[in-house]
Image (cartoon, rainbow, N blue to C red; front, top):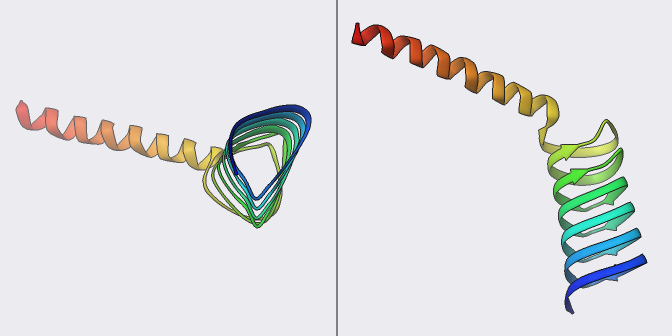
Length: 122
């Protein structure tokens, strides 16, 4: 089943593909959701593009971007994780400290290369 949007107080999505979900409580099971906004999200064996919630619980699921006050993950993957409190077994590709480290490394490398090339021109 493919559906564009769901908006409700409580949404249960099972074995579906949904473009957008906006709900106070969302439960996603074996589904794909492109964009999800909720107070509480619980996902099991699902893929979520962008998840924005107060509390996110992922079990065997993946998310591109997860932004929440609290994230609990069991055997899940997240590309970009924006959360002050995280619990569970997770594989994050890019976290806030890693993003700052990449930014600082890029800045330093650019300054060093700029200084090296400006000395050659003199």
